[in-house]
Image 1: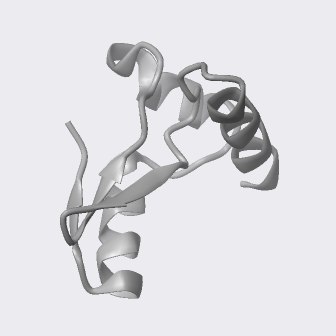
Image 2 (image 1 turned 90 degrees about the horizontal axis):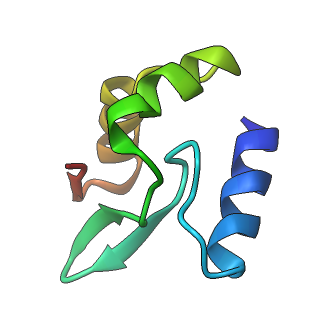
Length: 72
């Protein structure tokens, strides 16, 4: 997950969309997925580098932050 976090933060810092969906923003009392490249193929990119599916990531975030998690 460290590689994906690094890449996503770098992309967002450069004004680009993230690639792996690891970044979320706190908005209106919710955790909202930061802009992400090609959502249609997000799961495939995540699987390719060993990340869990977004459904698992969202579930984990809900448990950690006790907030609604918005993922399109």
